[in-house]
Image (cartoon, rainbow, N blue to C red):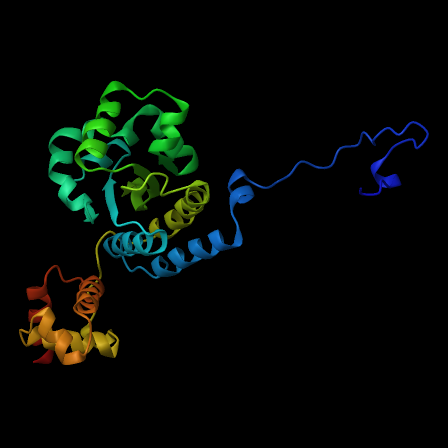
Length: 280
């Protein structure tokens, strides 16, 4: 048993504890949950997003980092002038099954999204992140939101995990990053706390970014990416580039995606034309 000292006790003759209480803890609820590995995960995400050159660049980096670091295949990035217009984004960034989910979502379910209900809005504004599991645990969902979960997320797309992270963009605009997975409880207590930390830090990065990509010259690209650009300009396919450079075809796809982001090009054809014009 731990020894009781004079500093923890009052009058020794009565054995009463000193009534002067210790100062209240200043640790936030998030910090009480986070462990070193969680901070390391958050740092890895931030490191990949910190040098984004523009909002489009930031979107792609954020989605890719969340996929890689949290093991999420299905991630989307919606943006709008206000919180409620986020759900009307006509051209969100979609990865995994979210690309296939998008047409039906936009046509039928956007106005009934669970993360647009009042309880979700309050949680997203105050803590930066909300999950389907948390919302269902604290309050009955509005009938339309419950139908969205039951019919769209679960019955049609077999998504048992759903969460959203709110980010602040420049000019007062807002973004919602949607995260989905067929595995229940894919985002547990530690993951949710880490995402809440990331919501604040990623917002700090995004608020200062320009809304469009600055056009970069190809000469600023790393040597390997310049090699890929040269072969794209020559008309080679991804498979042919992979064979020429002894790379996996998936690696070539990632290289091209990063090159498009860095140069501001919207397509492979635009990149090839830019390469040919700069070569001249």
